[in-house]
Amino acid sequence: MKHFHRPKQTESIADELFEYKSLEKKKLKVALAITGVTMFVEIIGGMLTNSLALISDAGHMFTHFFALAISGIALICADRPACHHRTFGFYRIEILAAFFNSLFIFAITAWIFIEGVHRIIHPKTVIGFEMFIIAVIGLVVNLITAVILHGATKESLNIKSAFVHMLADTFSSVAIVIGAIIIYFTRWNIVDPILSIAIACIILIWGWGLFRDSANILLEAAPKGIDSDKVRKVLMTQVQEIEEITDMHIWEITSKMYSMTANVKIKGDGKCADVKKILNRIKHIVNKEFDIEHTTIELD
Image 1: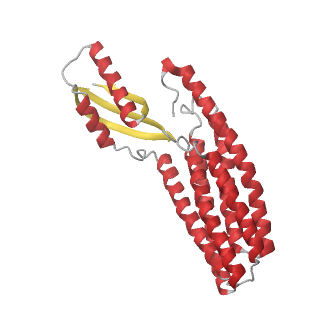
Image 2: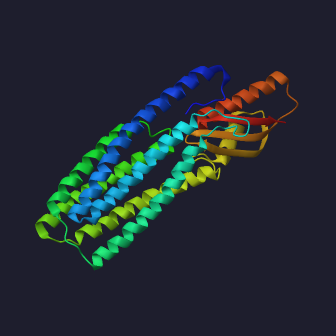
Image 3: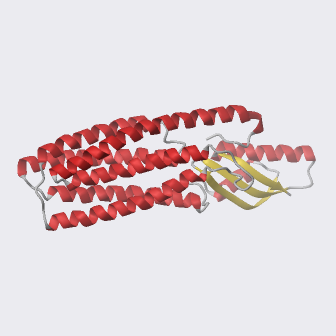
């Protein structure tokens, strides 16, 4: 993601960022509308057919709905300009949204597990044919929403999480369709709570990944795939004038927006012009090799 600290390209970057965010918002609105309608259909269908699997899938879909809604709010807030006491702006709101969404997912998962175990102990009759029809509708909607969100997943943790969630829910919808067929022909009602627990496991795995990634960003851990030792080694190999690099910190402000600070000791005295060239080379290398665009380097 391009961002705000490259003066020569300020206008083009701003236009690019605005264009990307506008497209992202449009995709979110469409996905949100489709997901919301289908969620209510599955809730009503689950109640009418007595299918916990459908209700679980509706709960799964509600987590996307919640994630998409929070993502939209976060995008609106993130557009607000930086100020004197929030110098990086409001980009972290998106990460906070992902973090709280993961906690909400854990709560949903716990409820599905408890209800699933209760249904296994005390099975209830499930109407297989209607369950099949509603499950097919859910499957189609998940595929459509995944297509809508595809292509906006590289720059945003929230959009990526919603997209992966849609793919996971697509598999759960396939499982429910198969389960509905089994229930219709065999009357094995226990298949329904077993499917709901399986869906809960999928939700839990996805929720844990979202929790881990968002927590790492909030704790200002090094971005995934970037090793500070490797960055130091690359710089000292490609910039022969560097004698030592200390006090290096690399962190992620929001999805794909990396920052770095470091203290760099230069060999010999060096001339002012040479020092400027070295500084520019350092910034160019970390940008090209590691996508770190916002750098603050102190030269000794």
